[in-house]
Amino acid sequence: MTERASAGRVAVVTGGGSGIGQAVAEHLSSAGHRVAVLDINGDAAESVARRLNSDGGESIAVAVDVADRTDVDKAAGMVRERFGPVEILVTSAGIEAQSPYTDISQEDWDRLIAVNLTGTFNCTQSMIPDMQAGGWGRIVTISSSSAQSGAPERAHYVASKGGVIALTKALAFEYSPQGITANTIPPSIIATPMAEAGVKAGHIPKLEDLAAMTPVRRAGMPDDIAAAAAFLCSDHAGFITGQVIGVNGGWYI
Image 1 (cartoon, helix red, strand yellow):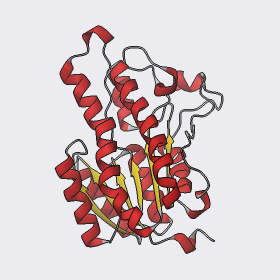
Image 2 (image 1 turned 135 degrees about the vertical axis):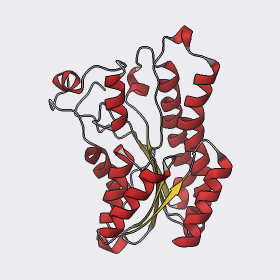
Image 3 (image 1 turned 60 degrees about the horizontal axis):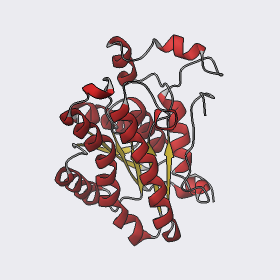
């Protein structure tokens, strides 16, 4: 089956207003899918959707807080009303933080878990029934290589992303027999607005310094992650499920 033959499905991308999520939305739209761009920043989501539509795609923007299940269910309903049942889901929405372990507040811990892990739970649980009904689905979660290696002063972030990896594997075992694959991509250092903010805040080294320690000698770009995600969302990837696909320039692992 060609990629064009599988085009025209309904795709949802969370965190689609910038960075990796934006690049994923662009790749899926280019493949012919109808794309719902979900982001807590409604203006950013609208800007991306407008650009996709001007390039000949079909896209809508939905402002949503993935940590709020009511918000997620409402967004899913809007997508169904406009495009039909959800067939592809890429969960890129996420936040990060840095703090010595003993200084992490309960509020900070709860917020990281709520957005990164519970947000992934909310979106997958809300939209998997559509995939079950259609007997076909693709789920790609965006985790983090720090969940594989550990990272100093980022225990809450690492724990939340480690949970995303484990959740993805559980979904693969439960739903692959129904034609629904689930895989996760744990990026290393990617040149995104979130990474740039981390550099500015002093939470991570300069990207060029990190690039020097990477075998490919450059920081990753959102398109690097998006290309892999788009493939995992295609019919060609139907025999790939429950996998941790490291798109990291050879970083560690």
